[in-house]
Amino acid sequence: MKVLILYFSGTGNTKFIARKIGVELEERGHSATPASVEKLKPTEVGSYELLVFGYPIYGYDMPDFLNDYLEQMSLPSSRNAAVYYTMGYDGGNSLRTTAERLTALGFNVVGTAEFKMPGNDGLAIMDKDSETVHKVLNTDYEESPDIVERVKDLVDQIEGGNNQNGDERDSVLPQKHILYRFLTPITKFLFKLFERGFTGRFRADDSCIGCGLCERICPADNITVRAGKVEFGDDCYFCLRCLHQCPVEAIQITRFTEGKFRYRGPTGDYVPAPLEQNREAKNR
Ligand SMILES: Cc1cc2nc3c(=O)[nH]c(=O)nc-3n(C[C@H](O)[C@H](O)[C@H](O)COP(=O)(O)O)c2cc1C
Ligand code: SF4
Ligand code: SF4
Image 1 (spheres, rainbow, N blue to C red):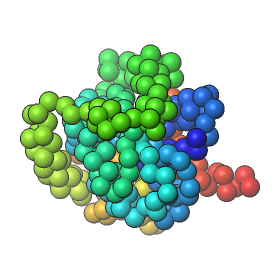
Image 2 (image 1 turned 30 degrees about the vertical axis):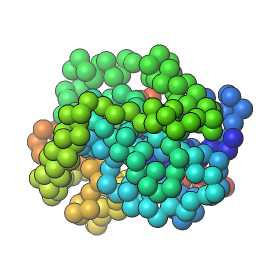
Image 3 (image 1 turned 135 degrees about the vertical axis):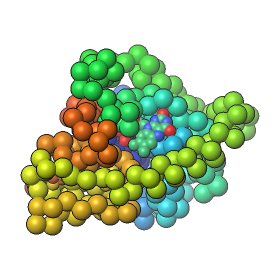
Image 4 (image 1 turned 30 degrees about the horizontal axis):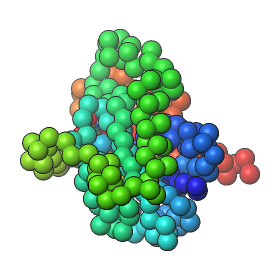
């Protein structure tokens, strides 16, 4: 089976899982191509037999900008799809709602999975020598039994997908406790308030060296570095990539992030898609 694993990853967790799913698929004899939505235009998504779609949870749901991507995406004749997300603590009913979104676009969702990973939001306000940070740095996410099992389970669902009847298909759409149905709109609303509150609170402090990296890696094109001065616009996805990737830890959102931990992904070496792209172009 030819599988496209399409994902967005702000700080590396979702990309890490995309790679793990790809390796598992390849080991089982399938062809798997992980690709970031930042590298692949929605209208240039090529032909494949199954789409795996992965995203980080923001406010108990899929980041809004990915809705636009999905709606513009060119659809192949085979419409089988699987969905996963990564989260820090809880993703609410997001698997179900995203599966329903994909179904409305004409996909047949055959598998779903959630992955608990380090929360890039909480880590940005954690002391560098805190217990949580030590735990994150000392965990071997490559060999985590929970992640390995969940990846295998998702690929099992994908492989069984074509043979599922209607009831079995419905069972891959997890429906969390009924309370989540009410909770999700509330958390979404709170998240919108949070976004509004923090728009305009991003800043580069005096330690900024004007290197321009934040401008190059921002997926929303929301940062401009002019004459060594960093300016943030109003179109932020709140992915926190700039904050975690700045080489001198100059980016702050309020004083609570000052001197706090910066997260470079589960293996500590996350390279955002635009930089990877530049490197590939240079090596050509
Ligand atoms: C703005 C924002 C909102 C978040 N909201 C949630 C949430 O509601 N629930 C949760 O479990 N994790 C939440 N997180 C944590 C991320 O979902 C989690 O760290 C994810 O794995 C990040 O993936 P990435 O590294 O691929 O960007 C949030 C992170 C950010 C930046
Ligand atoms: S990445 Fe950091 S140091 Fe470089 S321009 Fe941006 S804020 Fe300044
Ligand atoms: S400015 Fe916003 S969208 Fe851009 S990298 Fe920073 S947090 Fe992400």
